[in-house]
Image 1 (cartoon, rainbow, N blue to C red):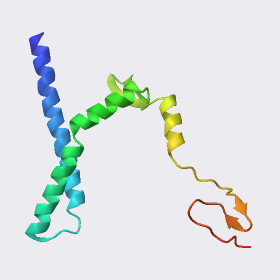
Image 2: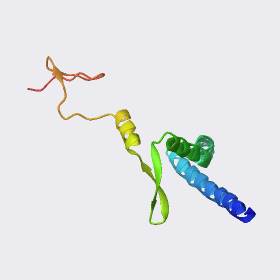
Image 3: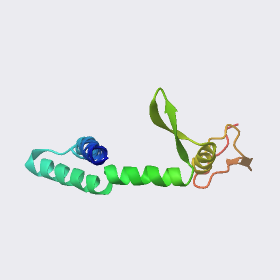
Image 4: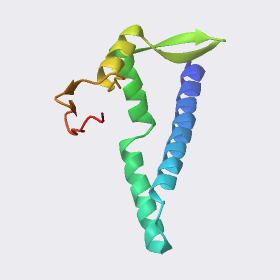
Length: 123
């Protein structure tokens, strides 16, 4: 029994470190765009470290746990592997949050009804 928990702990540590490395690499590439010289490299590394402080394997695990707890996602067994899947309730909540594009938009007095932009209707 002790070997299983040790194996689980080592696997969690190795996989967590690998995920952190991938996140840091992506953040480093994103933050280094447009920066030159040693000062730019230093600031890119610093910004990548700040991103890794906010988003790391622990925050991802906590996010998945919260989504599962709220029944927004579930885990299904496919081909002897677990994979996450959005639930019907989660899909409904996601559709409520994402904006929808309407093909037929409402026009009032020759202007399109929009919260920010009013365009004159072309005749």
